[in-house]
Length: 467
Image (cartoon, rainbow, N blue to C red; front, side):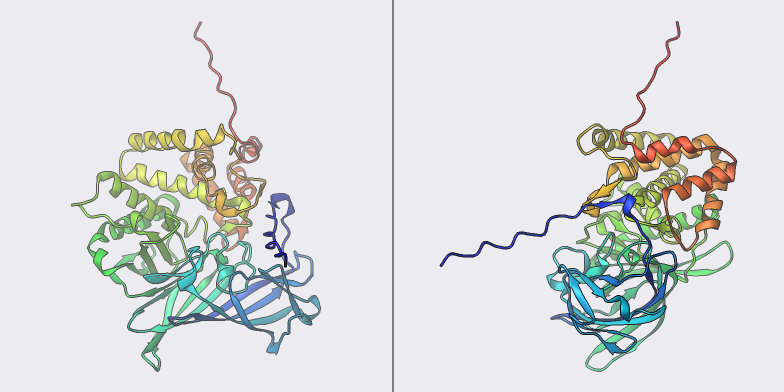
């Protein structure tokens, strides 16, 4: 008998910036319980949704990828597939519109296998359990509206074997912990500040750590912790010093104070991103956090200092004020790269830092801008968002932010930043909102800046002769 050809993979779907539309219902509170075990992890989720009058009413769509859905219910009523909900493709759950009220609670029970998750996106196991949710990894943990304009407060309970996972970390402040039967234990973490799902984080494992405290300008004491495998603990001191320098600098330069009682960093050997700014629980590749005088060069020390600062600075430029959609990525990344460049200039040599940054720009970004992969710092479309974490979005994006400061002066730029936070704290916004804050705070017309966001490349250089 003739063999059937294998099913063709689904054609890639291109997303466009112009198609953005607010959701009809949005998650407001998220309650998660993780029951971590060797063979699989059970994730129980309870999410409160509210009607969003800015969006059109319609069915509730929850992203859900590579997970086993055991059950789903609304307000305690179990839903059945076909009658109450259906799958759109293999990765979106669509709950029928007739079941939705102005306020309702969706509960799900799912099973995931972190040890088999070789994408290193979502929750995975590599020595320890850890997460990477930016850009779209949270949907691999539990069904959710996995987009950055959905900002919810999170309560997370982690349960795991005490011998293999003595350390249990998540976002925010720990509220309680204790022992369970069968050699297991738990910790509960509450993050009071609404955040998008890409900033969710969980770490569980056998880790060493160093600890310190930092007193903010208003007198609040913050507990600082940096975690790593036991063998690397003696290389964490510089990261702690860099974190404190970053906290002081952001208070002095931008008036920005840390908002939680705890700030933790975890160094992970197998980590796809260089580092990730999850709220209150930054996760780093070891290359960006470990430094010891015997083995690290001056450049290594400066890199650790800069990356620690970059992720810390995201607490305000990225976390407290986030991106409406992923097309706005440079809103958080260009701005935060500019901030970490300014920090390194102040900590080291302004001239040397500027030369280093221009060298990076010429080596990584200029070829991109002049080649077939050229794109504006705010792209108009993408197929896979993970491919847009580019030198253009980051480095050229930082240069565009630097032009605001050049035109407005340091004080004018600070006025614009102050207005940006005053207007948008706790919300998901756009590059246009940032430009409007700079413009309005300084009483100037910055319309010409629009071209830097819509066009690749730059204006041709012009030289005037001296006669």
